[in-house]
View 1 (spheres, helix red, strand yellow):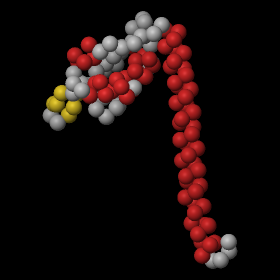
View 2 (view 1 turned 90 degrees about the vertical axis):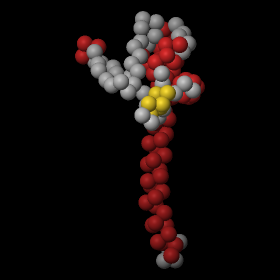
View 3 (view 1 turned 90 degrees about the horizontal axis):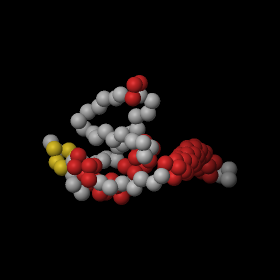
View 4 (view 1 turned 60 degrees about the horizontal axis):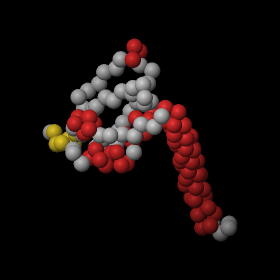
Length: 125
């Protein structure tokens, strides 16, 4: 939580994975989908709440297990979770596309500016 890193492990062989003591593993149950958990954990309010009880361990900030056990999270009905997740994923895809477009335009402008300045200094404009 300290640096906002979070991940979903989908498609695991035998639904078994392994990791480190550096992170907490949350598993969806019959009333909650994994993507919903992911979205909740990424939300700025959840992350801010998680920062309050940080424990220091060798200079690293850690979210205590007790925070996750005591945290009450909203669990709407499955159809509502699916609808919200689909909407947010569609919105994120649009944001990603706009960022790619912005990067492409930025690269084009970066390439165009020297050419325009060159022509301006040569009196060709």
